[in-house]
Length: 480
Image (cartoon, rainbow, N blue to C red):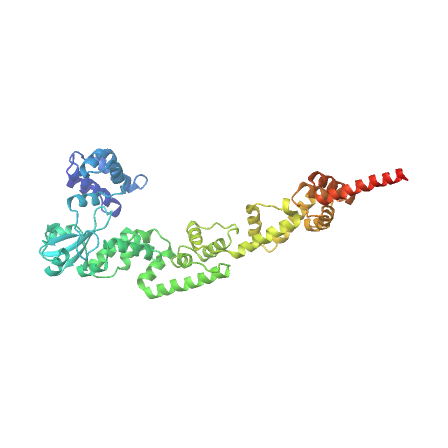
């Protein structure tokens, strides 16, 4: 098997190969039984280079699963089976496991997290590791006085160094120094965790700050106390993979931050007004900022913005709302009154033309026509024509197509109420038959029959009176 140094020398420079290089080095140094051949390493290099197979992260997982194995990982770091699987999958980094075992870090006064204390050529540093970084990325702050260093441990306590090294060894680790340790008083935990949360917020308007190339260049610029050059910006993967509008925004932000902020603010104000004009009375700040910033950053055109505003304010417009927009609309709890009014209008028209039985349309049917009416001035007339045809089919005995269900039902409603002495349920089969008969004599017979069968008081009393009158008349005739 080849020497480790020779294997590492084979691997090309570039961020896409960094994880492969570090994995081979870490596995070789940790697991003596695991060896790598030059041919195997070359195949991995070629696979990453072509970009049509596994990336370095997937190769890392396969190395740990196949070449190292779960049992060896469990023994090496005293892990459970579940914890070992998290290492293999990449959810837990070997860097964090290795550092935790070799150097656990220390809980120091007035410092968040568990930093390490390093001595480098007589200088003292407080050092944190970026969680999950492979290879590990170290952040350091110099402790400029012995009294300050002692204060972290407490009066009379022994100062314990986690590492002692030369300046050359320190530089070889690629440690990024962030200044004086007194600045750490502002952090309650590992400073990176605070920065990560801040970066996520900033990335909403500066998406390139999450790019690894960009972060690496920023770290180098910080070490050299200088701004990023335009050439460095254009060398990042983010720059290469984004369109002209997105690049223009990145250049503006770096070249004239004040103008960039003004553009952000102006677009947010405009988007807020557009949403209100479209019927959203109180859109959330998160929704406004997200939609406006997509245009500002070059992700959306103004056409896409207008489409998404329509989709957000009218779910029945037929325009698909993007998932991110839908989430923000849902979180805002906005009540879109304009859409509710359209649905209510459709529902009232359907009930007026088809009645309580046949007018029971589903929410989906109402939504479809509500959307049409919102977006087409002629759609309401189309709906009425559609309902007229349905009404003619349901009640063919009423040939005048201008008659609605309400027009037809009104006189028969009074007729039935007069006969029964109470209002007849219009959703019943009896009322439907009365309407279809469209004949007072036939309808009267039907209502008397059904009234007697159902024990309707007025119908029963009327029938009994008629019987008594008839029987009484016959008796009087017989006695005379």
